[in-house]
Amino acid sequence: MRGSVGRRKVAIKPPADLHTEARSDSSAGRLLLRFDRVERAAHWMNALLFAILMATALPLYFAQMEALVGRRELIVQIHTWCGIALPVPLIISLAGPWGRRLRRDVRRFNVWMPEETRWLRGRGREPLPELDKFNPGQKLNALFIGGAIAVMLGTGAILKWFGLFPLDWRTGATFVHDLLAAAIFIVVFGHIAFAVTHPDALRSMFKGWVTESWAARHAPRWLQEENALVSAPDSTSPKDLN
Amino acid sequence: MGRRVFLGMVALGAAGVAFGSGVQKIIGSAFGSGLGGLLPGGDRFRIYTITGSFPVISRDEYRLQVSGLVTRSLDLTLDDIESMPITKLVKNFQCVTGWRVPEVPWEGVKLSDLLDAAGVHPNAGGVEFDSYDGADTESLTLYQARLPDVIVAYRMLGAPVTTEHGGPVRLYVAPMYGYKSLKWLRAIRVVEHAELGYWEQNGYPVDAWIGGTEESGNQAAG
Image (cartoon, rainbow over the protein chains, first blue to last red):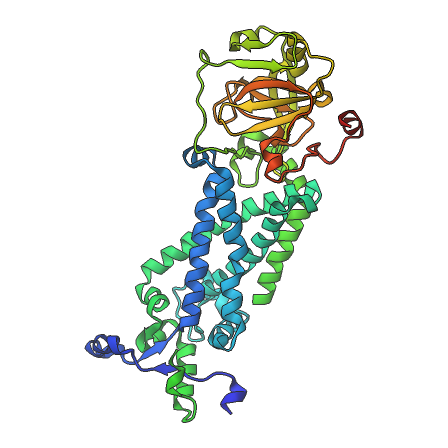
């Protein structure tokens, strides 16, 4: 049965070093695993590559920065190789048996209810009982980044191997690469702003867990799903903890 | 939903590659190169360097040497260059990787006028250029160097060429990709066979004609 559902393991015991913290805040209750190690590693590798790509993009585009940094060819090399490496952590973490949770979370991005559009219009002020593990804004962020990676890789490849493409395509690829880069800066800084103003959610990207009360407020449907799996007697197995 | 957003972005990206060149032209002509240069994806120069900083050369200390297979070597000040007949061009700056700044005003001296002033030997076949940055080099065949839209520019965009654009004096080779238009021009050497320039040695095409080989250019080079 659990095989047919394709998901198991849900509630986790807090790691030893978190025990006291969890206990000291009894209202928080149980801890739930929001991101496993694979998901966290994929996120932070992706974040690191994005950071290098964005930092090296600045002097390539702004003359004043280029004046300070110089050595354009070196910057281009760093930018290019980080770009080529960009899909690697995602592919590796999605591909193997270790990527089960990540794959399931990616599938969640494909679900969209009309209520979610309304929630987004109201800037998330109205509670939405149907909120899944990720709220509509988080889903759009993930989808945008996924699409942006694909488009930046495609246009970046045209700029890197320009000799293979007609001149008009190179101009078009530069146009798209530049415009999308500006959009990426806005979205990534928005993502960081949301993260630092939501420390519980941010912590789950460092340590993996959220409290049950957090889940009840921000991801009620996910909590239901997790609870259902916990109550199924054969669904938890301790070695699944990560 | 997710698939639609993802595929939509990819489709939009592909459309941008196919039509971005045209869209950029429309934006450029609608807003002028002023605002067009501010918008991401608009008409703007990307500043290339090889070394860690721009070489800063004052007007007074600037010298341009013309040497090699010439009757008399020249050592020109900026005043000397400015006293020669001026050539004004309004032409695109086109980078080989795709970015383009349309209708840039250029002013300077025809390279062929400088070569004539020095007197080119009959056995000369190429011209090499050095930069004040100590790293960049470029070269042209003698035929290419004598084209009427190849100039030694000291004004650009309606003002003296700025340091970031290669001032006080740079090369502007209108019919070729931007890497041919060497910045911070220091020396012009007339030789029998020109060596490849810095960018060609680093993988940029030796055939730098914008949009592909120009027949006559190749014949003359051969």
